[in-house]
Length: 128
Image 1 (cartoon, rainbow, N blue to C red):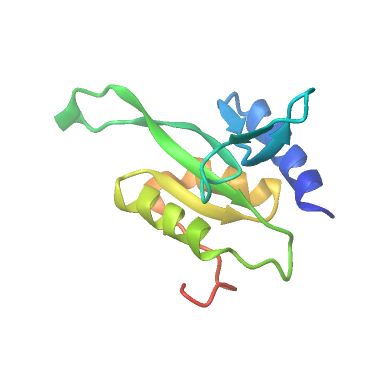
Image 2: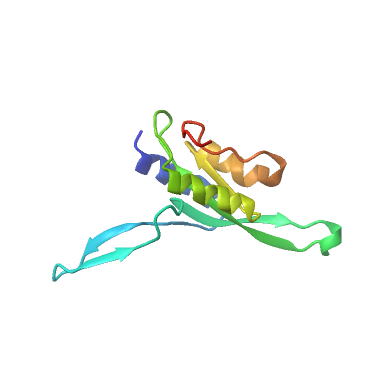
């Protein structure tokens, strides 16, 4: 299955959970007159969104949104680029949820488990 097909399946699953996620695109595109337009920031994950989290009593029990970044990879063989791994590490360091996911089940586990589970980055990357 291609990364784009996996991403579509993940977006459907997250939509069923009523979680707001956006596809983040990076690239160069040509306008109708042929002028290039550069969009996005290299390294930002494929899907970005907000995962709800109920804060403890010490924080008055408010529900807060936790920034979540999901980097989509094929089930086997894909390697996370260093700039993508660095972005995921930064998201986690700053209190968000950042993870490599390879299926809708992986994505759902990340948003359901929140901080109860260790967020795992791509083990196929040499720096992880």
